[in-house]
Length: 331
Ligand code: KG4
Ligand code: ZN
Image 1: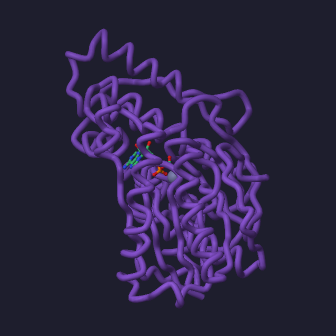
Image 2 (image 1 turned 90 degrees about the vertical axis):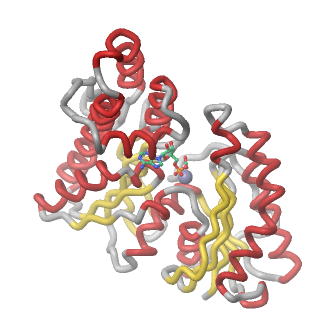
């Protein structure tokens, strides 16, 4: 089954052709990062306009790279929720047009489901159930993937998402946008024990909170920033985020008894987080999966993969497929 995946929920315009949910023939990602960098964050209206400009060429390039034409496509899978409405509309309109014109079945995919299913692109036999730490620019969720397409949320952030914590702290430190990959790189040269930043622990829940850490970084930088290298501050900040994420993920393993753990979303590309999760999983004899960095951040191959699984379950959408700005994974 050849699935054309389309993703335009935030600031990446992406299209991909994936065979049977596992073989990536193409995964074209046009990033708007440079465009939004001067504003220090994604400007929704600017993103929508850029998606309009890019969507057709990106789809064409995905087909060309895959050496396919639209007549070879069996299913179109598109991110329709959650995300920036104007941005989502561009991908969904393109998908609907192709679907209606050529009578190709259409599937709307939840963006976070796409992130989770990126694991099956490189690890197709990873079994159910598993615990997935979904950490992106907009979400920090601990999810039990009970079976194909069945989710239960164990914990979520009460304030900022993990990616937001990286991006906002980087902005305060004046080191650029998006902050995640920059802090990741700087942290490799720094001492993670140089400064002890607070780790929030929320009662008995598996929820996260990153706003206290962000405030601590801002205060510290203003008061004592000149006494430490930017590498040490980055490494110490990243160590605090990693501790909170890994502690809750391992606590979820303890509480559920599920011995398979995966990661997903842009922050899962973090090299320190990947290394620490792998280490903790190995020491407990737990199966661990994490997509390579290019499949952690927004891309259409993950949407095609999730779409393939919808198709195998016989779940299709009609031309009335809607875009939804905000929706948890479980509804
Ligand atoms: O999943 P994603 O591409 O888009 C959303 O769905 O939000 O995630 C983007 C987020 C940004 O906050 C970015 O700073 C963060 O992922 N990110 C990273 C890394 N690469 C991207 N955070 C930490 N380390 C990285 N290497
Ligand atoms: Zn994402």
